[in-house]
Length: 271
Ligand code: 13P
Image (tube, rainbow, N blue to C red; front, side):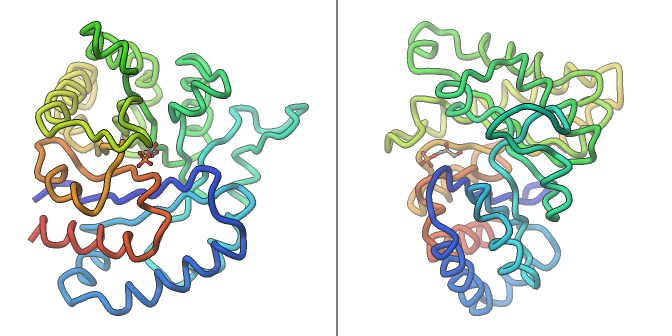
């Protein structure tokens, strides 16, 4: 049983058009309605939480389609400024007016393809926390960094950047997603041993950070998600790992029937 429940977060990346978004949520709704009593109760009491991150252009459709559903719609990215000359960007106030209050920040694809750094990620987190958002912040090492035994130093550096004083004081709004870059979209899932080691290390860094603030309890309460080739086949094993509080799921989250399966797996694992 996970103290903070299980979070199933689907990151669609640049997939699904607005029409496909409609169809996805219609199917998801039917799937949720036909869940057994245990899974339904877990959604109702928020022991299992479902979050879907469609592309910006599909957010409105997703919000409309999920009006009466226990599903959070989140954005995959956001700018740290509230407005201004930043062509192609989207701000917190724009998202919040739409009804979005959760954002993904620092995904490795944003870091690798769009030049985001620990610095810009920190700016975004601090700005969005002060705008009242919930944040899923991504960290993770590359294949070369793992091969050079740098996994822990990379994670520590990323966490040092992310966990500012502001993040410490608003930790209830923060979720950390550990996504080893080499496992993303490659079909290579980290082994449960690698996952437990990384998540245990992340938890220990968080605990140290909170030592002089609100204490261990706050560190324990931060959910740590695993991401990187999560499938309906490996999700149960991943959820059994200590300090894994859910999944950040890319490719496999694009099918509503998989999302239903993830909910069922989470319900079984927390019963
Ligand atoms: P995949 O599940 O497709 O490997 O993607 C993981 C991911 O990057 C989720 O944010």
